[in-house]
View (cartoon, one colour):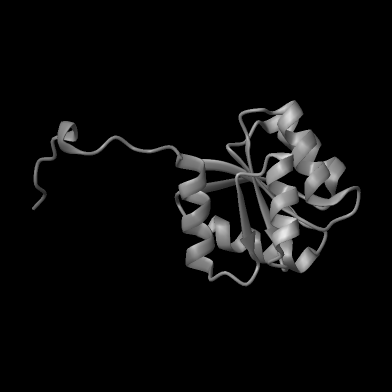
Length: 136
């Protein structure tokens, strides 16, 4: 037996947060993609391996978020962030690094990154933080 459902009582659906990722390590890209694709709050719309690719994706796709590795070919996260924000100013850039360095954090913030996450964060923490950043 099914019960009647009044759709007026249901909360409005929240669209998924669109994001692109950039990391020069194929295994990191694959792990991030699997992690993100398992979260209904997020929609992975592009994957890049270097600065040029992520900047082109950001300009073309205008994602809500861009998650960029701090160290990658072509100028790293600093250059990625600076150029993404020039071409897609509404995209929020999040730095991702294996290193938790105050100088790297400061440099990424100077480039316009809104957050700095480490690859050692737990999966749930990383996903929750991306959602928080996007909705801030």
